[in-house]
Length: 147
Image 1 (tube, rainbow, N blue to C red):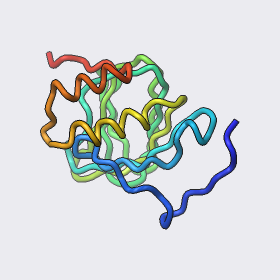
Image 2 (cartoon, rainbow, N blue to C red; image 1 turned 90 degrees about the vertical axis):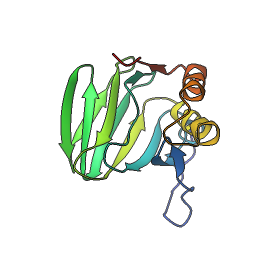
Image 3 (cartoon, helix red, strand yellow; image 1 turned 45 degrees about the vertical axis):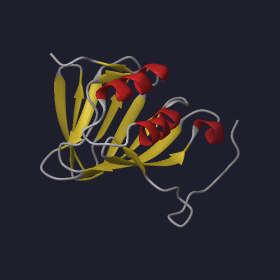
């Protein structure tokens, strides 16, 4: 079980650059004892390819419109919109009509380490695809090949 903690803007960690998206790690699983929480933002069209991972994930949109695709169905979520993606489901997201800002929550540790490795090992946009795929494989993230 984790210990109580508070994150204010003054002590929040610097945002990671995750393939062009800003990701601030607000709560790592080693601190909470279970889940992880992130503040994410990106320009229009910025987001990951279709992918799946072994943790559940949820998004709550704060600003803009976030297009969340789960399987083959896309959902445009405005501020106040929420999406839950079960573990193992192929999904992606990107801002539409401008930048988007949202909170994401994962059901178990893993994403924070994955994001940190992407920030360190895949710093360019567009990304070095072989490097991105190598990081993804190491973290049990499956990237769906383009059709």
